[in-house]
Image (cartoon, rainbow, N blue to C red):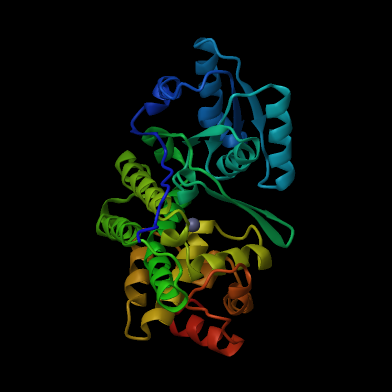
Amino acid sequence: MFEKSTWIRLPRNVVVGHGVLDDAIEVVEELHIGGDPLVITSPTPRQVAGDRLVAQFREAGYHPETVVVEEARFAEVERVIEAAKRDDTAFLVGVGGGKAIDIAKMASDHLDTTFVSVPTAASHDGIVSGRGSVPEGDTRHSVAAEPPLAVVADTGVLADAPWELTTAGCADIISNYTAVKDWRLANRLQHVEYSEYAAALSEMTAEMLVDNAASIKPGLEESAWVVVKALVSSGVAMSIAGSSRPASGAEHLFSHQLDRIAPGRALHGHQVGVGAIMVEYLHTGEHGHWRAVRDALASIDAPTTADELGISEAEVVEALSTAHEIRDRYTILGNGMNPDAARDVAEKTGVI
Ligand SMILES: [Zn+2]
């Protein structure tokens, strides 16, 4: 008897390219939502795209409201929820690198409204996926929400973002290699639900990015195009899987733990990239593919050492040996590495 079923939630409109911010209203109208938007943005993205978008909404006869968020905090999510209720908002629009989009995503999940993602930096795959998390003290508020109903990614805007944000996005994609390895392991050892389609798409996305690494250069709109398409593709893999598994394994646990131990020091993508070097070593050993992962990161200017992350040796060892505690996600870390073993891996891979 066949009893399987799946429900794949994808964005409906994904519009990527030069000048597409000018098409944002058309993209929204095509969704037939009706009602007025609440634009969630932060100070720099507001200047880069937020104000322009609000003006476009006004010209088109909408009555947009704006909330400017400063920090990725749960209190900010609540502020957005309050504003949306007060203004009787029909949908949310997140305009930003990650913070504003994460907050919009979490608020829309709570409000049960849809949201539109307008990334101003190609810094991580959360700009397309439904997955979001906001750190709060020692914990993280995570949501497994729907993906944005539409994504409007203007490559002109993305290419102007600070270069390290783009290299962070690249590193987040390169970490798909180890995420998929962890997923397969979890499937074999724990019968965690696994999708061959999603795994293949996620790996192919990392492969294509690495193959194109030479063409990813600061200030080039073409580079923004390559990276944002890869982030979209990674997001689709997560949608097919119905989980973040295709793009998040032990290297993400390591990064989340760094967020607790050494908050605000380095970008998410850069942390997962360094984590991926060590996790690849754990999967395939000294003669495995960890050098290829490291070289791929280096080729796009992403950090490969603790020093470049601005994190101490002790912090790396602590994060790696306690990463398994972060959440109930089975990975190569099993029920934890002892600190000596963690130090050993970090030293052998040149991370410390
Ligand atoms: Zn990530």
